[in-house]
Length: 187
Image 1: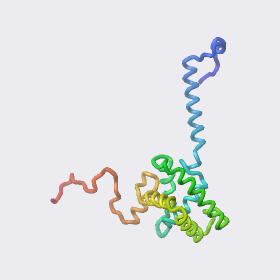
Image 2: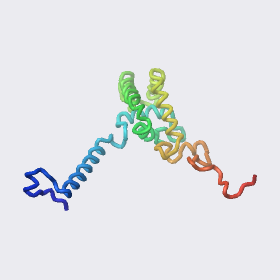
Image 3: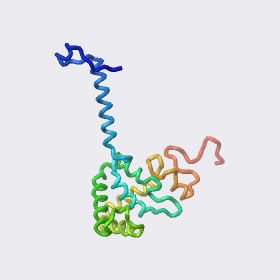
Image 4: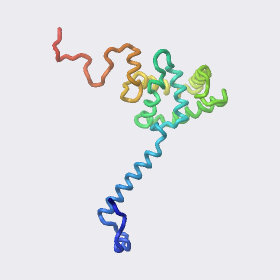
């Protein structure tokens, strides 16, 4: 077990032994890692819970449940959140501002948060955002489609739901040929 005790000579000079230095460094690194993890926003990499609920309203207005899962049910929120924390960092401000404006508009028009609105009110809110902030709405629409129809490995299209909806017998697999040419061909 690690002991933080130092000899009197080390206390007077302020020097650590090599072993004590390594141990203190390891503990500092672990503490920093724990602190960074604690700063994470719940289950999300970029979005907070309020933003996620508002984004779910918009995404589900774009791809509603209709015998197949809605956008949020298919993991689109996970897809967008992961992309905003990584490849789409350049869109972080647009999402922060757009989702904040959506929340304000919902409160102004309906007196409730977007997630508390009826389905009809949510649709009206999405239409108002589409007309009032077309750039933001198109960004959300594009990312919603990417998450819904893209590869499940990126967090969306949970269980390949959109591929089943489209009756794709052979879901696209990146980097692999669709046909196995090694088993002889008839050409």
